[in-house]
Length: 466
Image (cartoon, rainbow, N blue to C red; front, side):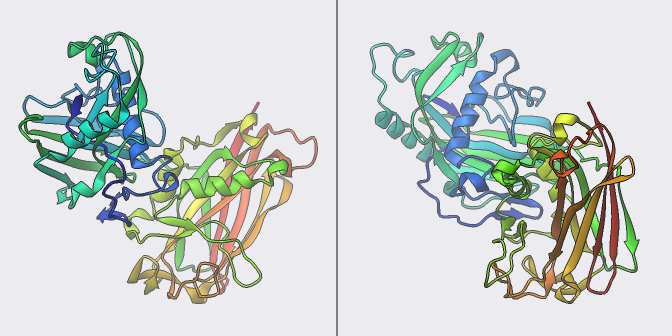
């Protein structure tokens, strides 16, 4: 068995069905589907956390680290792991810098039982590993905890026992030379071992806003399983630098504006797939729960054609969601691209969030009363074209309308207007004249006007090299 003052348990206590939020901080519900939880369930993230923590040599292991200096070891993908602790010793105070757009997963109180930690062979020769028995032991250790406390930016998280999750089954871990378990005196040379099971209490946070944050936890285990411990994470989320090659000029006197411009490369698809990856990319940048994809228009309703309103979230996130989503997925955001970024299923995108400025006051999917772009200004019409070296090459970059939020939508709303909405344009060589050389200076020219004729002219400029 191996305690890591943090725990992962299966979907045993999944009473939460909506995201808990603390100001700008959103806790992903423990019963979320992989699509809503950055690609894995809580239990699957628990497995990934153990595999990550045990894959790092002891000398730089982030779980043993007491300062945060090794927090970046082995990190990859859309979710950043915080290290927890193996228990014992005094309070731990870590200082960590996390890239913008990363969700955060960490244990509050967790256990692992299995082949590597003295419960069965090979670390306990002669005892056969039986997953049901290991699960029972892990559950007993996890549920014996006497108290769990977590604060995020000074606000307490309630009902922590509802965030229990266990590994979906037995899983393997790969240990390096000089691994943590050898440090603890276990006979585990470098190699891959199975099975292990995990159980515990975990939290998965949606990406935090850029700036300073503090997460503190205090746990009192049953004395038979360990001693009390405290861990504090002083987190800085790195600021996102918006691209400077996207320029917006007002047309008339709009009462709304464009924010959080992003110019990046991502999958766009091919003719054989019907460019389905374009829609997948949009939905992945603005995932549930905050955004949901509304149905494409049908015979009896109107669709939004991309990510629309989802779970209510505060206006302070509107100018950060697009950049956070692009960063979380690792899409290169820059004005200089390679030819491969603009062909063979990849494309260059320009995207932004549209927000009131000042707008009017009314209801939206996010609130009963607040700043909105009223339905009376819709449809908002967009049209775009693509130029290379100042020559028009694709006059059909996109032409579409953003509809009002009414009961005519396939996802109907009874509100006064939009609190915010995203816009995406994407293009690649498939839509240019045959034989077009991708190398050169490119520009998306886009106009966006409301029903009163006011709006914005956008110029997104980038360069493609060989």
